[in-house]
Image (cartoon, rainbow, N blue to C red; front, top):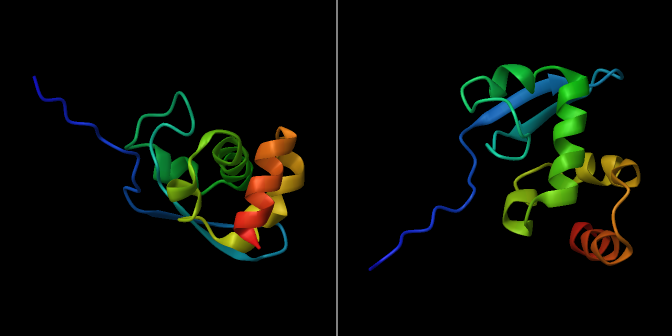
Length: 97
């Protein structure tokens, strides 16, 4: 029997503004946040606090092919708040440099 695997991929782009007024565009990838359905995710990511939590969750769980869809500057900015294991933190620091 043949099984088809579906890998995580972006369904679009969501934009939000940080408190400093910077506009950030994030990929909409279902499954990073546990509970929202994919149709509601772009609306939720327009809120800065949700977008920050989404990015932290992505840093903790997502694979590199998904993380490279995010703006590198935004990932670097969120990296200290992600509280990652030492090995993952070093790997992401290397990949983002």
